[in-house]
Length: 156
Image (cartoon, rainbow, N blue to C red; front, side, top):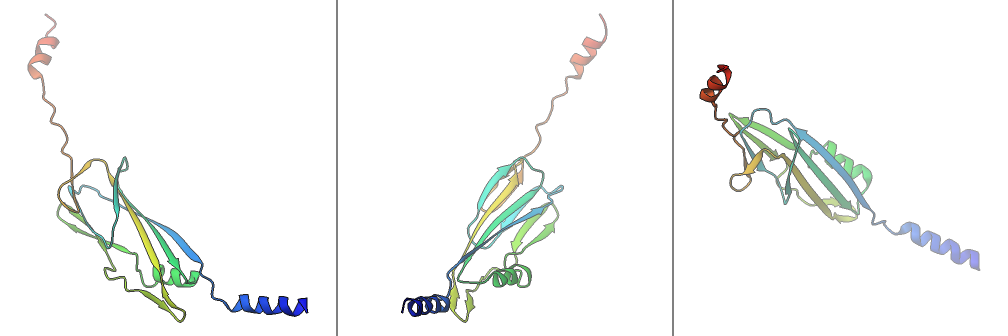
């Protein structure tokens, strides 16, 4: 009898869908080069943080519930759901989300719940200049003291 109950519960547990959470952290660097302005046209909410690096780094944490690892991999690699494109217009460097709709992910078991947390690390030489726009801080102008150099260098 105990063996029958044990087999029954094992069969019951095996038939229940698993509600596992999948998580993948994506990192993407972007070279800023000589750009004077950075414009962000990214889907969803994101946090902008200054850092001492010379380039932009985007860290995206994707969490997908009630889905398989293969499904998450498919949306990252094949569908390019979390891809970010760049556009250079003169001195303006734009980061643009490839997928701006992010329609719900549906499986035979129902709709998958998805969260995406994004942090954008901008070089600390850029200051906010309006909504979703950052401008390179101009270097301080050094005042030459040529008159003082000539006096000090004359040896008198």
